[in-house]
Length: 114
Length: 109
Image 1 (cartoon, each protein chain N blue to C red):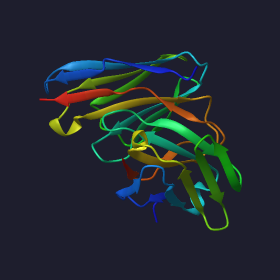
Image 2: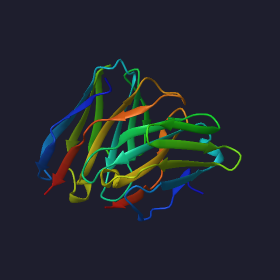
Image 3: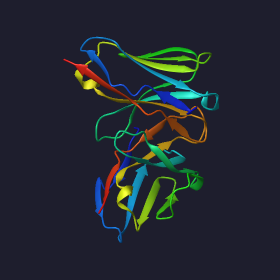
């Protein structure tokens, strides 16, 4: 089973709202990732967690705040977003950080900021 | 040079033909490589991984890795209209994955 789940599937929020995206995997993977993807572009890495610790933050604005409460869950807290933050937000996981590990994506959350 | 580069296409092939997708990479990411298929509006789906020089076959898909020339390719035999999608090449450096810009494939019935 290589399933990563994400909720919600769609989210519309105003620029003053606070919302959270959730990601869950039950494959025992110890590395989890957040990506942002705009139309006709490749996924753009935002954050990497390894063993529940933040490993990589790709200079993401502070209005995006990641959280890894345990090894199966990954959250992305959103606050004061801009319309240009509208995108498909993808969560992914791999067994661990390392060159031979495959990465699996969840279905994504389609975010629209109004 | 970008870590991973792909020809964005679009690539069109008739149904039943072989589709050939190519990807080149820089020295910085010369480790393990992956092909993802992404349908419009959906998330990327892993279809092949390759770690050593040579060919790796899985059903209608064959991945090829040539480390001397720094390229990775994906062949899709007997292409079907359901193969129409964007194909992303990715490299895993150990700490993160680098993605190419993707090649759009259309299989014409």
